[in-house]
Image (cartoon, rainbow, N blue to C red; front, top):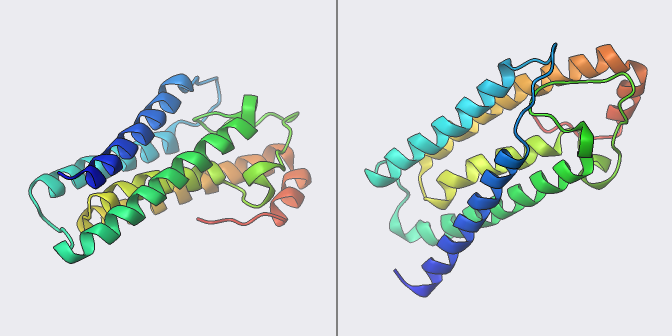
Length: 185
């Protein structure tokens, strides 16, 4: 392996380390009434995407041609880096309102700074980028197709659940807030 590849692998492992630290440091604390269903759907999508991509990678199944691999590696590491940046920035902006599960408090502040100035769910955008960037980085189109479909489905379910709960608890305040922000999924 050349130095160029070693640098990419080091960056990939550093980002993965940051992602794992984010998961460990901000472990889900489930209060009464919080919905856990979509959390487990998303977790299953992430884990199954990574496992399937690993199986495909190590068996050299569904790999792109050798000539396209440097392009995929570059796009994968860029997407991975953007994903962790957006995820951590969004997590920081949410502060005490962050939860791995759907939880809405009537007194909850609606965050309108950072990535929340433009997007309704930047945490999920970051998570999507992190997950789909793994098969891109490993130049595996089979894993990429699975990750895209699985994460799109899981995140759409979560966003629908979350938005219904926000509208139910926060009412017009949330409806007005979301009008000025893009919904990605």
